[in-house]
Length: 181
Image (cartoon, rainbow, N blue to C red; front, side, top):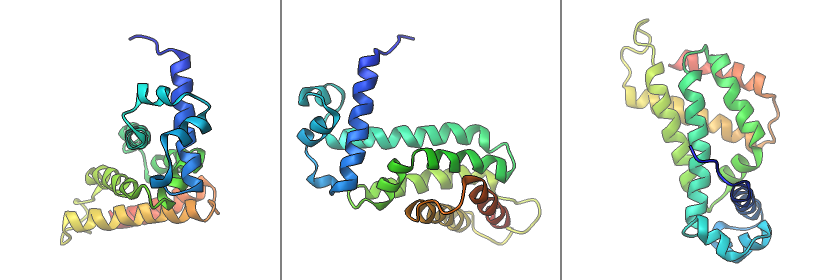
């Protein structure tokens, strides 16, 4: 696999950071490519070397985070609820600026939907059918319920400045998801 030039990675990170910072200040629709270039301290043309436009940049940024969550989910689903959720809450904490901006932004309404889709897909294999507690429940309704609740708790936690540490959130949300699924 070819090694990516550090300058390219540095420019891409600067552009991603710039768009998130700008989204904390104004609506995404009001942000221009020149705004992003100025904030990232790069030439406008550099943005177009990597992305088609600001929408492509935002989409790639969101996709990067969803993919990182997906990779964590591949091994986390084999753990108990607490151990499986803790890395996610630590990830949300580490990437606070991104998640707080995406969940609060009117300019990125598709983010919440993409996050919910990822989570409900991940919960499909977690439904307890053996004990009988979910025997009379529709899988679609149960997945929507659990997924929406989980995303809602993440949203609340981030919007309120993470009032509890990731360990507390993982424990409490894990208990509730185990009861539901």
